[in-house]
Image 1 (cartoon, each protein chain N blue to C red):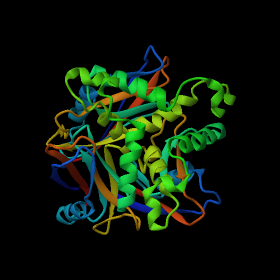
Image 2: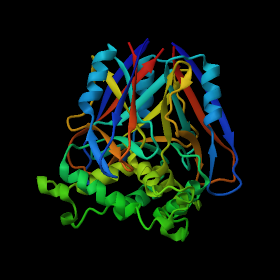
Image 3: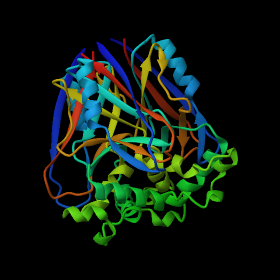
Length: 139
Length: 139
Length: 139
């Protein structure tokens, strides 16, 4: 069994943002030398997300507004989490909607994705350095 | 390490619908010859879902109504995604709630599920052919 | 390839509750003898969740209130699922938000988690015995 590990780093300028990381995950699959296996990609932070969906700027704006409707940032006073001195209570909720991790198949040395599937880093409490973990196992 | 890959195809007659695929995933596990490992099942499309929950028709109707409340199909004009000519902005949101993929354990050559766990294909933008991927690794 | 399986049992006194199981999952990783691999942790019940987020009591209260807002327990009559004699229609919805399972990397014999990542059992229909499955594969 082969295994491979890589970290990706991000520092987004706004509170909420989205980065297409499909090519970087595909690179990791190449480097792993795995032909058949599984590729786990997860946010290592609890106010960020890794998910699979469309690379379309209108949709990213829709996600932004929809997440704000389901879990508004303010007023901060609505969240108990703020009592620790944090103002990111909403980010812990938004992340549950978008998900922590994605597991993808590797087949014949490539990510085995459908035609429109793109892997995204979804930031919901940005403006600081954060990491994503890629872990690959297989043969 | 053994590995196995299979695709399931769907073409649901309505926009939203649910199909119990537990037996088909169990069949794939049998065919894989894997006794202990992991079984990934994921939608290969970004407006569809694979999830685990109850095989109960009342619940499926509840999901339908609840998803419509959290991410209404119309008016289409509320979604930026429509500017690409699509009318399925809501489907990309609904899919985040229901999830893209499920990873299940394989133990002694069987899907290692709890008593009521059933694997479902959840369609949120139907009326065309779509695929689900099953990838199994183990020994 | 090594593989390891363990069940954790819970019986929470209230309908909704959260239990930090990070140490118990880490113990399972130790017992597995796996240095590099994947660790799947999933609820074996369809009205419970396994997720990764913050170990902070204010946030747990925020989750409780937020889930109740997105999928209220009552009135029971709003759910078709009740026709089977159940009063837990809301729990099947809440579980979709919180998620069924988490897959984590194992690196150098440890759970490969970010600094604040904690693994939680999320109960949304408690007051009876329920199980979580840990399945580990790797080498």
